[in-house]
Length: 415
Image (cartoon, rainbow, N blue to C red):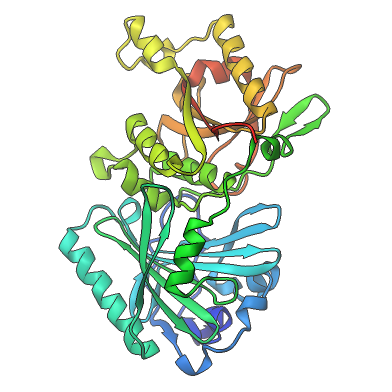
Protein backbone atom coordinates (compact mmCIF):
# COMPACT_ATOMS: atom_id res chain seq x y z
CA UNK A 1 0.00 0.00 0.00
CA UNK A 2 1.27 3.46 -0.84
CA UNK A 3 1.98 5.33 2.42
CA UNK A 4 -0.50 8.10 3.13
CA UNK A 5 0.93 11.28 4.54
CA UNK A 6 -1.30 12.66 7.30
CA UNK A 7 -0.59 16.29 8.20
CA UNK A 8 -1.27 15.73 11.89
CA UNK A 9 1.52 17.68 13.46
CA UNK A 10 2.12 19.62 10.28
CA UNK A 11 -1.14 21.22 11.37
CA UNK A 12 -0.38 21.06 15.07
CA UNK A 13 2.93 22.85 14.86
CA UNK A 14 3.28 23.68 11.23
CA UNK A 15 6.12 21.18 11.19
CA UNK A 16 5.43 17.70 12.60
CA UNK A 17 4.56 14.99 10.09
CA UNK A 18 3.21 11.47 10.52
CA UNK A 19 2.96 8.68 8.00
CA UNK A 20 1.84 5.07 8.18
CA UNK A 21 2.14 2.08 5.89
CA UNK A 22 -1.33 0.64 6.44
CA UNK A 23 -4.70 1.68 7.75
CA UNK A 24 -5.19 1.14 11.48
CA UNK A 25 -8.24 -0.73 12.82
CA UNK A 26 -10.97 1.19 14.57
CA UNK A 27 -9.91 1.64 18.20
CA UNK A 28 -11.94 0.01 20.95
CA UNK A 29 -12.37 1.28 24.45
CA UNK A 30 -10.85 0.74 26.85
CA UNK A 31 -8.62 -1.99 25.38
CA UNK A 32 -5.12 -0.65 24.70
CA UNK A 33 -3.89 -0.60 21.12
CA UNK A 34 -1.38 -3.24 20.14
CA UNK A 35 -0.68 -1.69 16.76
CA UNK A 36 2.98 -1.29 15.85
CA UNK A 37 4.51 2.15 16.10
CA UNK A 38 4.46 4.19 12.94
CA UNK A 39 7.13 3.29 10.40
CA UNK A 40 8.04 6.94 9.91
CA UNK A 41 8.19 8.94 13.15
CA UNK A 42 6.89 12.37 13.83
CA UNK A 43 9.62 14.75 12.76
CA UNK A 44 9.92 18.35 13.86
CA UNK A 45 10.87 20.75 11.10
CA UNK A 46 12.23 23.81 12.89
CA UNK A 47 11.93 26.04 9.82
CA UNK A 48 8.15 25.73 10.00
CA UNK A 49 7.72 26.22 13.74
CA UNK A 50 6.70 29.87 13.33
CA UNK A 51 3.56 28.77 11.51
CA UNK A 52 0.30 29.36 13.40
CA UNK A 53 -1.83 27.10 11.21
CA UNK A 54 -2.83 24.55 13.80
CA UNK A 55 -3.68 27.03 16.52
CA UNK A 56 -6.54 28.24 14.30
CA UNK A 57 -7.93 24.81 13.33
CA UNK A 58 -11.29 23.80 14.85
CA UNK A 59 -12.00 20.28 16.17
CA UNK A 60 -14.29 19.30 13.29
CA UNK A 61 -11.72 20.36 10.70
CA UNK A 62 -9.01 18.56 12.64
CA UNK A 63 -11.05 15.34 12.70
CA UNK A 64 -11.77 15.58 8.98
CA UNK A 65 -8.12 16.13 8.10
CA UNK A 66 -6.82 13.38 10.38
CA UNK A 67 -9.40 10.63 9.87
CA UNK A 68 -6.76 8.02 8.89
CA UNK A 69 -5.03 8.60 12.21
CA UNK A 70 -8.30 7.75 13.98
CA UNK A 71 -8.81 10.40 16.58
CA UNK A 72 -12.11 10.24 18.44
CA UNK A 73 -13.95 12.75 20.53
CA UNK A 74 -13.19 12.01 24.16
CA UNK A 75 -15.42 14.66 25.69
CA UNK A 76 -17.21 17.90 25.02
CA UNK A 77 -18.30 20.23 27.81
CA UNK A 78 -19.40 23.75 27.00
CA UNK A 79 -16.53 25.45 25.18
CA UNK A 80 -14.17 22.54 25.89
CA UNK A 81 -13.58 19.57 23.58
CA UNK A 82 -10.95 16.83 23.80
CA UNK A 83 -9.87 14.47 21.01
CA UNK A 84 -8.00 11.30 21.94
CA UNK A 85 -5.91 8.73 20.12
CA UNK A 86 -4.57 5.55 21.74
CA UNK A 87 -2.43 4.58 18.75
CA UNK A 88 1.25 3.97 19.29
CA UNK A 89 2.68 6.90 17.38
CA UNK A 90 6.28 7.98 17.54
CA UNK A 91 7.64 11.46 18.02
CA UNK A 92 11.22 12.11 16.93
CA UNK A 93 11.84 8.37 17.20
CA UNK A 94 10.16 7.97 20.61
CA UNK A 95 6.99 5.90 20.98
CA UNK A 96 3.89 7.84 22.05
CA UNK A 97 1.28 5.70 23.80
CA UNK A 98 -1.50 8.31 23.96
CA UNK A 99 -2.23 11.62 22.23
CA UNK A 100 -4.74 14.22 23.43
CA UNK A 101 -5.72 17.38 21.58
CA UNK A 102 -7.71 19.84 23.71
CA UNK A 103 -9.78 22.66 22.24
CA UNK A 104 -11.29 25.72 23.88
CA UNK A 105 -13.88 27.90 22.14
CA UNK A 106 -13.22 26.08 18.89
CA UNK A 107 -9.43 26.50 18.88
CA UNK A 108 -6.65 24.17 20.07
CA UNK A 109 -5.17 25.06 23.43
CA UNK A 110 -3.07 21.98 24.28
CA UNK A 111 -1.57 18.87 22.69
CA UNK A 112 -0.44 16.19 25.14
CA UNK A 113 1.92 13.40 24.11
CA UNK A 114 2.23 10.65 26.71
CA UNK A 115 5.46 8.68 26.30
CA UNK A 116 5.19 6.66 29.49
CA UNK A 117 3.01 6.23 32.54
CA UNK A 118 2.85 3.40 35.04
CA UNK A 119 -0.85 2.77 34.49
CA UNK A 120 -0.57 2.02 30.77
CA UNK A 121 2.91 0.53 30.57
CA UNK A 122 3.40 -1.00 34.01
CA UNK A 123 6.12 -0.41 36.56
CA UNK A 124 9.53 0.36 35.03
CA UNK A 125 12.88 0.76 36.83
CA UNK A 126 13.50 4.36 37.81
CA UNK A 127 16.87 4.33 36.06
CA UNK A 128 15.24 3.25 32.79
CA UNK A 129 12.57 5.97 33.00
CA UNK A 130 15.21 8.57 33.86
CA UNK A 131 17.37 7.47 30.93
CA UNK A 132 14.44 7.57 28.52
CA UNK A 133 13.48 11.06 29.67
CA UNK A 134 17.06 12.27 29.25
CA UNK A 135 17.17 10.86 25.70
CA UNK A 136 13.91 12.62 24.80
CA UNK A 137 15.11 15.88 26.32
CA UNK A 138 18.33 15.63 24.33
CA UNK A 139 16.48 14.93 21.10
CA UNK A 140 14.14 17.90 21.47
CA UNK A 141 17.09 20.12 22.40
CA UNK A 142 18.99 18.98 19.31
CA UNK A 143 16.08 19.50 16.95
CA UNK A 144 15.10 22.92 18.32
CA UNK A 145 18.70 24.08 18.60
CA UNK A 146 18.27 25.40 22.14
CA UNK A 147 18.55 24.23 25.73
CA UNK A 148 15.34 24.11 27.77
CA UNK A 149 14.77 26.36 30.75
CA UNK A 150 13.54 24.96 34.07
CA UNK A 151 10.06 26.11 35.05
CA UNK A 152 7.65 25.38 37.84
CA UNK A 153 4.00 26.07 38.50
CA UNK A 154 2.39 25.85 41.92
CA UNK A 155 -0.60 23.51 41.84
CA UNK A 156 -1.37 23.88 45.54
CA UNK A 157 0.34 25.04 48.71
CA UNK A 158 2.24 21.73 48.91
CA UNK A 159 2.35 20.52 45.28
CA UNK A 160 4.67 22.09 42.70
CA UNK A 161 4.73 21.02 39.04
CA UNK A 162 8.28 21.18 37.66
CA UNK A 163 9.16 20.86 33.99
CA UNK A 164 11.60 21.79 31.21
CA UNK A 165 10.44 24.36 28.63
CA UNK A 166 11.46 25.20 25.07
CA UNK A 167 9.92 28.06 23.09
CA UNK A 168 10.16 27.83 19.29
CA UNK A 169 8.34 30.32 17.12
CA UNK A 170 4.70 30.42 18.20
CA UNK A 171 4.92 27.11 20.07
CA UNK A 172 5.81 26.12 23.62
CA UNK A 173 7.08 22.65 24.55
CA UNK A 174 6.86 21.59 28.23
CA UNK A 175 8.47 18.27 29.17
CA UNK A 176 6.97 16.93 32.41
CA UNK A 177 8.88 14.07 34.01
CA UNK A 178 8.16 12.34 37.31
CA UNK A 179 10.40 9.33 37.89
CA UNK A 180 9.21 6.58 37.86
CA UNK A 181 5.64 7.73 37.21
CA UNK A 182 5.36 9.43 33.81
CA UNK A 183 7.00 11.21 30.86
CA UNK A 184 4.65 13.69 29.18
CA UNK A 185 5.24 16.43 26.60
CA UNK A 186 2.72 19.29 26.52
CA UNK A 187 2.63 21.42 23.36
CA UNK A 188 0.75 24.71 23.43
CA UNK A 189 0.56 28.07 21.63
CA UNK A 190 2.85 30.75 22.97
CA UNK A 191 0.05 33.27 23.03
CA UNK A 192 -1.63 33.35 26.42
CA UNK A 193 1.12 31.49 28.29
CA UNK A 194 3.51 33.03 30.81
CA UNK A 195 7.07 32.38 29.64
CA UNK A 196 9.28 34.52 31.85
CA UNK A 197 10.38 32.96 35.16
CA UNK A 198 9.66 36.08 37.21
CA UNK A 199 6.27 36.54 35.56
CA UNK A 200 5.54 32.86 36.17
CA UNK A 201 6.22 33.31 39.87
CA UNK A 202 3.81 36.26 39.97
CA UNK A 203 1.19 34.25 38.11
CA UNK A 204 1.53 31.41 40.62
CA UNK A 205 1.05 33.84 43.49
CA UNK A 206 -1.97 35.49 41.85
CA UNK A 207 -3.68 32.32 40.66
CA UNK A 208 -7.46 32.89 40.70
CA UNK A 209 -9.34 31.04 43.44
CA UNK A 210 -11.58 28.06 42.69
CA UNK A 211 -15.29 28.53 42.13
CA UNK A 212 -17.20 30.00 45.03
CA UNK A 213 -20.39 28.52 46.47
CA UNK A 214 -22.41 31.21 44.71
CA UNK A 215 -20.81 30.36 41.35
CA UNK A 216 -21.33 26.64 41.94
CA UNK A 217 -25.02 27.10 42.66
CA UNK A 218 -25.39 28.86 39.31
CA UNK A 219 -24.29 25.66 37.54
CA UNK A 220 -27.34 23.70 38.72
CA UNK A 221 -29.89 22.86 36.00
CA UNK A 222 -33.49 22.05 36.94
CA UNK A 223 -35.90 20.60 34.38
CA UNK A 224 -39.06 18.47 34.68
CA UNK A 225 -38.25 17.44 38.25
CA UNK A 226 -34.64 16.55 37.44
CA UNK A 227 -31.76 18.42 39.09
CA UNK A 228 -28.31 18.01 37.54
CA UNK A 229 -24.80 19.37 36.99
CA UNK A 230 -24.22 18.90 33.25
CA UNK A 231 -20.96 20.86 32.95
CA UNK A 232 -18.48 18.50 34.61
CA UNK A 233 -15.51 17.77 32.28
CA UNK A 234 -15.11 14.18 31.12
CA UNK A 235 -11.76 12.50 31.74
CA UNK A 236 -11.29 9.08 30.17
CA UNK A 237 -9.25 6.77 32.41
CA UNK A 238 -8.22 4.77 29.36
CA UNK A 239 -7.27 1.07 29.44
CA UNK A 240 -6.09 1.09 33.06
CA UNK A 241 -7.49 1.00 36.56
CA UNK A 242 -7.39 4.77 37.03
CA UNK A 243 -11.06 5.39 37.83
CA UNK A 244 -10.28 7.14 41.12
CA UNK A 245 -7.56 9.25 39.52
CA UNK A 246 -9.71 10.27 36.55
CA UNK A 247 -12.52 11.18 38.96
CA UNK A 248 -10.06 13.32 40.92
CA UNK A 249 -8.95 15.06 37.73
CA UNK A 250 -12.58 15.74 36.79
CA UNK A 251 -13.22 17.26 40.21
CA UNK A 252 -10.03 19.28 39.92
CA UNK A 253 -11.00 20.64 36.51
CA UNK A 254 -14.48 21.44 37.78
CA UNK A 255 -12.88 23.61 40.47
CA UNK A 256 -10.28 25.05 38.04
CA UNK A 257 -7.38 23.22 39.70
CA UNK A 258 -4.39 22.25 37.55
CA UNK A 259 -4.22 18.47 38.02
CA UNK A 260 -4.22 15.36 35.84
CA UNK A 261 -4.70 11.67 36.54
CA UNK A 262 -0.99 10.87 36.20
CA UNK A 263 -0.03 13.50 38.76
CA UNK A 264 -2.78 12.18 41.02
CA UNK A 265 -1.45 8.63 40.61
CA UNK A 266 1.91 9.80 41.97
CA UNK A 267 0.32 11.67 44.88
CA UNK A 268 -2.04 8.77 45.71
CA UNK A 269 0.61 6.05 45.47
CA UNK A 270 -1.52 4.14 42.96
CA UNK A 271 -0.33 0.58 42.40
CA UNK A 272 0.16 -1.35 39.18
CA UNK A 273 0.13 -5.04 38.28
CA UNK A 274 -1.34 -7.21 41.03
CA UNK A 275 -1.62 -4.14 43.28
CA UNK A 276 -3.36 -2.05 40.60
CA UNK A 277 -5.74 0.59 41.83
CA UNK A 278 -6.04 3.42 44.32
CA UNK A 279 -6.99 2.97 47.95
CA UNK A 280 -9.49 5.28 49.63
CA UNK A 281 -6.65 6.38 51.92
CA UNK A 282 -4.42 7.18 48.94
CA UNK A 283 -7.22 9.07 47.23
CA UNK A 284 -7.92 11.12 50.36
CA UNK A 285 -4.24 11.93 50.76
CA UNK A 286 -3.89 13.07 47.14
CA UNK A 287 -7.03 15.23 47.14
CA UNK A 288 -6.09 16.88 50.42
CA UNK A 289 -2.67 17.79 49.03
CA UNK A 290 -4.28 19.34 45.95
CA UNK A 291 -6.89 21.16 48.06
CA UNK A 292 -4.22 22.67 50.33
CA UNK A 293 -4.07 26.41 49.73
CA UNK A 294 -6.78 26.29 47.05
CA UNK A 295 -9.70 27.30 49.30
CA UNK A 296 -11.43 23.92 48.97
CA UNK A 297 -11.73 20.99 51.35
CA UNK A 298 -12.35 17.26 51.02
CA UNK A 299 -15.28 16.10 53.15
CA UNK A 300 -16.18 12.47 53.76
CA UNK A 301 -19.98 12.26 53.88
CA UNK A 302 -20.56 8.55 54.39
CA UNK A 303 -18.26 5.62 55.08
CA UNK A 304 -20.70 2.78 54.43
CA UNK A 305 -17.83 0.33 54.11
CA UNK A 306 -17.19 0.75 57.85
CA UNK A 307 -20.92 0.38 58.54
CA UNK A 308 -20.92 -2.95 56.71
CA UNK A 309 -17.80 -4.10 58.54
CA UNK A 310 -19.40 -3.33 61.90
CA UNK A 311 -22.18 -5.70 60.92
CA UNK A 312 -19.66 -8.53 60.83
CA UNK A 313 -18.69 -8.38 57.15
CA UNK A 314 -15.16 -8.65 55.83
CA UNK A 315 -15.38 -7.48 52.21
CA UNK A 316 -18.96 -8.68 51.72
CA UNK A 317 -19.88 -10.76 48.72
CA UNK A 318 -22.00 -8.82 46.19
CA UNK A 319 -25.14 -10.67 47.22
CA UNK A 320 -24.64 -9.54 50.82
CA UNK A 321 -25.04 -5.88 49.91
CA UNK A 322 -28.53 -4.76 50.76
CA UNK A 323 -29.86 -1.26 51.30
CA UNK A 324 -32.54 -0.39 53.81
CA UNK A 325 -35.07 2.36 53.23
CA UNK A 326 -33.23 4.48 55.78
CA UNK A 327 -29.98 4.06 53.82
CA UNK A 328 -31.73 4.97 50.59
CA UNK A 329 -33.13 8.08 52.24
CA UNK A 330 -29.71 8.89 53.70
CA UNK A 331 -28.15 8.75 50.24
CA UNK A 332 -30.92 10.83 48.64
CA UNK A 333 -30.74 13.54 51.30
CA UNK A 334 -26.98 13.92 50.87
CA UNK A 335 -27.26 13.94 47.09
CA UNK A 336 -30.04 16.56 47.18
CA UNK A 337 -28.18 18.80 49.59
CA UNK A 338 -24.95 18.94 47.60
CA UNK A 339 -26.26 18.80 44.04
CA UNK A 340 -28.59 21.70 44.91
CA UNK A 341 -25.45 23.62 45.92
CA UNK A 342 -23.66 22.77 42.65
CA UNK A 343 -21.32 20.23 44.24
CA UNK A 344 -20.80 16.82 42.55
CA UNK A 345 -20.33 13.83 44.83
CA UNK A 346 -17.41 11.39 44.62
CA UNK A 347 -19.08 8.00 44.81
CA UNK A 348 -17.35 4.76 45.81
CA UNK A 349 -19.31 1.69 44.70
CA UNK A 350 -19.23 -2.10 44.55
CA UNK A 351 -20.51 -2.59 41.00
CA UNK A 352 -21.38 -6.26 41.32
CA UNK A 353 -23.68 -5.49 44.24
CA UNK A 354 -26.17 -4.05 41.74
CA UNK A 355 -25.39 -6.47 38.92
CA UNK A 356 -22.89 -4.24 37.10
CA UNK A 357 -19.46 -4.99 35.68
CA UNK A 358 -16.91 -2.32 34.89
CA UNK A 359 -15.41 -2.04 31.43
CA UNK A 360 -12.15 -3.39 32.86
CA UNK A 361 -13.93 -6.21 34.69
CA UNK A 362 -13.54 -4.44 38.03
CA UNK A 363 -16.13 -4.41 40.80
CA UNK A 364 -14.72 -1.83 43.20
CA UNK A 365 -15.07 1.49 41.36
CA UNK A 366 -15.25 5.27 41.75
CA UNK A 367 -17.68 7.46 39.83
CA UNK A 368 -19.44 10.81 40.20
CA UNK A 369 -23.01 11.55 41.26
CA UNK A 370 -24.11 14.55 39.21
CA UNK A 371 -27.87 14.79 39.82
CA UNK A 372 -31.13 13.25 40.96
CA UNK A 373 -34.86 12.98 40.25
CA UNK A 374 -36.64 12.78 43.57
CA UNK A 375 -40.04 11.95 42.09
CA UNK A 376 -38.69 8.97 40.12
CA UNK A 377 -36.29 8.03 42.93
CA UNK A 378 -33.34 8.10 40.52
CA UNK A 379 -29.69 9.04 40.87
CA UNK A 380 -27.83 10.62 37.92
CA UNK A 381 -24.18 9.65 37.67
CA UNK A 382 -21.13 9.69 35.40
CA UNK A 383 -18.26 7.24 34.76
CA UNK A 384 -14.69 7.90 33.61
CA UNK A 385 -15.08 5.74 30.50
CA UNK A 386 -15.31 8.44 27.85
CA UNK A 387 -18.12 9.28 25.40
CA UNK A 388 -21.51 7.83 26.28
CA UNK A 389 -20.81 7.87 30.01
CA UNK A 390 -21.26 11.58 30.71
CA UNK A 391 -24.72 11.19 32.29
CA UNK A 392 -26.51 7.97 33.23
CA UNK A 393 -29.18 7.07 35.75
CA UNK A 394 -30.22 4.29 38.09
CA UNK A 395 -32.76 3.63 40.79
CA UNK A 396 -32.13 5.01 44.25
CA UNK A 397 -32.42 1.48 45.65
CA UNK A 398 -29.62 0.13 43.44
CA UNK A 399 -27.50 3.21 44.06
CA UNK A 400 -27.73 2.84 47.83
CA UNK A 401 -27.13 -0.91 47.59
CA UNK A 402 -23.78 -0.52 45.81
CA UNK A 403 -22.54 2.49 47.81
CA UNK A 404 -19.32 2.05 49.80
CA UNK A 405 -18.06 5.65 50.24
CA UNK A 406 -19.28 9.17 49.57
CA UNK A 407 -17.19 12.38 49.44
CA UNK A 408 -17.41 15.96 48.24
CA UNK A 409 -14.89 18.69 47.54
CA UNK A 410 -16.35 22.05 48.51
CA UNK A 411 -15.29 25.69 49.04
CA UNK A 412 -14.05 26.38 52.55
CA UNK A 413 -16.60 29.13 53.08
CA UNK A 414 -19.35 31.03 51.31
CA UNK A 415 -18.14 34.01 49.31
